[in-house]
Amino acid sequence: MLSIGNLLGGMAFSPFALWLAVAAAASAVTFFVAKAGRDAMDAALAAPQGGNAAGGDKHTAAVAPEILWSYGKAYLSYFADQASAATAWDSAVLDLYRRFILPVDIVFAVSLAAFAVLFWLAVAGVSAAVSCAQPWLPWFAIFAASMGAVYGVADVAEDLCLIALLRDPADIGTAQAAIANLLTRVKFVTVFLSLIGVAVFGLLSAIDKVTPGLFGLFTRLAPQLLWRPMQGRGGGNASR
Image 1 (spheres, helix red, strand yellow):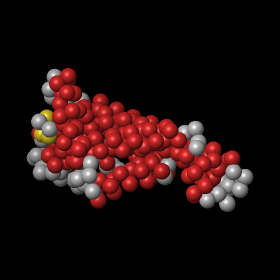
Image 2 (image 1 turned 180 degrees about the vertical axis):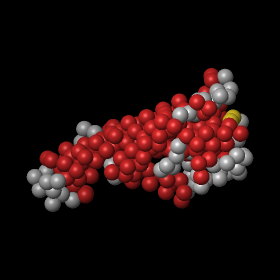
Image 3 (image 1 turned 60 degrees about the horizontal axis):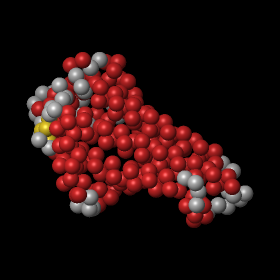
């Protein structure tokens, strides 16, 4: 029987090892950069800016739509109103969300999906090369790798869809909001089925909660080094 130690040892010498390390590092960096922006956004939105969570939505303070299982046109309009009225990093939250948080999240999604796919391809290669390996493992690894790839496509498509919809919230259509929500649900299901993807996300989230000050560098530097130069090139608030 193939032990976990032998499996990991074989993966360390696989052709994917270097790219696995690069994808892991990129996932970690972009997670904490995006988290810095999300923390600023959440703090700004914590106090309701007025209005009503339309459609009977139970959220009073607006939260990013892509973390919700279900949302529609009414909630996206409500979120846009709340985010337009709040400020973070000297900008409207809606502008920060569209032009910084979601683009960084796209890079994170690509990095995490690449890590998941490469991880399971390495598992498939090592387990197929070992005669005593469980016969189902290579097939399961291929399935999990495919789920990682679908997750990456769904997450990137979701982010691009939200960026486009929130550019002019008044023009959001019911069908467009439904497509964005469908992509969000596909993202949740496929990252869970990839196993390693949800494990990495859970690990990074746990690190952030247990040692919140450990990566405070991202919170301090992201506004100055990343967002404000982007703001200058964009000519200020471009959310409307």
